[in-house]
Image 1: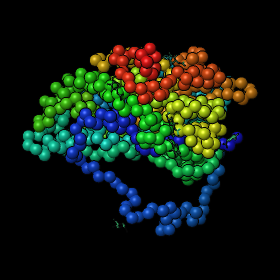
Image 2: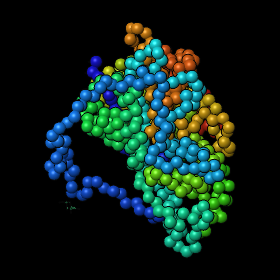
Image 3: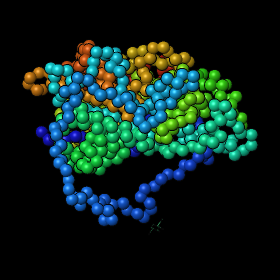
Image 4: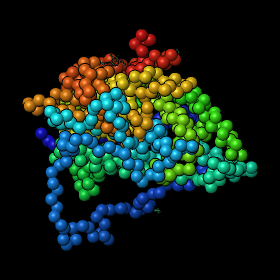
Length: 544
Ligand SMILES: *[C@@H]1O[C@H](CO)[C@@H](O)[C@H](O)[C@H]1NC(C)=O
Ligand SMILES: *[C@@H]1O[C@H](CO)[C@@H](O)[C@H](O)[C@H]1NC(C)=O
Ligand SMILES: *[C@@H]1O[C@H](CO)[C@@H](O)[C@H](O)[C@H]1NC(C)=O
Ligand SMILES: *[C@@H]1O[C@H](CO)[C@@H](O)[C@H](O)[C@H]1NC(C)=O
Ligand SMILES: *[C@@H]1O[C@H](CO)[C@@H](O)[C@H](O)[C@H]1NC(C)=O
Ligand SMILES: *[C@@H]1O[C@H](CO)[C@@H](O)[C@H](O)[C@H]1NC(C)=O
């Protein structure tokens, strides 16, 4: 068997916000001027070619003496350690407190703008589970599907629009901000657009290092080459080390643009997402936003003159807390809001995802199903023959662009794609608390985007052999280190370690693929039922 590691990603550093943005843009004023700097740093400068090696600077081979270079055995902590190391550091960000309760962890309640931390074992209902391989089993294969690290907001997103609004007010007469908002008198907008922040790069580098320590033994050595971008590059640098990451793995870059099929950006080939689905989700979420921001507007308006604060402005300030913290390390906006107001903001994010890219969306499973078809293809080493979703038949049919014999597969993608795939796979515990109301926030919530799609979120699949004959016998998945129950998948039995028998999983997942109607859910002209009857990401059968 060729040992290798296979990374795929969608090439444009595209973001969830951006899809919603693209759809909702017409509803919003366009940014005209900016409060702060918006110029981008460009490297290399015009007409300069950066080359490596650079003849002006000697490389390491010219250093006389190297010390010992023995590398040691590959780490296998996922099999050998009694527990896993949790992602629990946000270094070098400054931990913000909320208004009135400084011990409340604001950074854990920012929805899809949350920097990843490991979920506790009981997050999805399996308190006695652990990602560590059970004693009687061996790891055969690993799958990693991850989101990019922390990034700047999309062009035209709320924080920038808010900055423009302030800027316009501040250049006119009568603007003043006092008390908790006094910092706005000096505040300028310093965020870039779309690209990873330095902290975001570190998150993916850490993911690479972490994955190497846990799973490195599966991939004794990488083989051939391709170039790489952004998050995948940081992951590779972390996994392989900066000396060899450029030559140690295969990378497949899928084109992420309208008109191209790719399972890592499937919303591009699912036109209903851009029309009624996103609009409906935006409508539900905005209904909630108007409700929860009302008391905040009242409180903060006392401290600002010359600007009429709106619901969008409040959310812009909450987003600014998130974006400034992951980009600049600290944000004065975080301390403006109380604990419950952060939870309400988090709930807004849950609503968007639930109705557009979650269990409540009519085209969610359709968006995720292409990746599931590819997963089945990889698991069974069988080529896909039915191209009826977002799979690119050219790519998926080739041993070169879609090998079926790798011990590790790594796919880099976006928050909305991870959430769509989770729904396509029928991890129904995420939908256990039912449809999300847009007029109040329920106490019991199973769909919490801070846990599901934070920056650098990761879905890991483990294929295990728990018999002497070494054949795969079981499979399971964990989301940010918490094992997911598979009881929503036909044929998978309840298991405290979240394991499903390998063959049952294949049969159940094939049944799930078969029940998802990509063509109808993505292209049919339907009205989304308003009574919240959708819970598994498909347009209801009985309304077709
Ligand atoms: C870059 O090179 C082009 C073509 O030689 C020239 O027209 C242009 O002025 C140069 N730009 C800069 C910034 O030097
Ligand atoms: C499929 O992938 C190939 C190779 O990247 C590309 O040339 C082609 O345009 C893609 N087709 C579609 C429909 O996305
Ligand atoms: C792209 O997806 C569409 C829709 O499922 C499908 O009809 C078409 O065959 C696919 N094209 C390729 C090259 O995979
Ligand atoms: C792909 O690889 C498999 C297994 O090595 C082989 O049987 C098959 O012929 C190859 N297909 C092509 C198109 O090369
Ligand atoms: C997926 O989950 C839904 C319930 O949410 C269930 O009706 C359906 O049978 C499940 N599909 C499979 C194939 O397990
Ligand atoms: C979709 O259906 C509605 C209501 O039946 C109709 O008014 C509209 O023209 C249809 N749109 C398209 C693109 O067919």
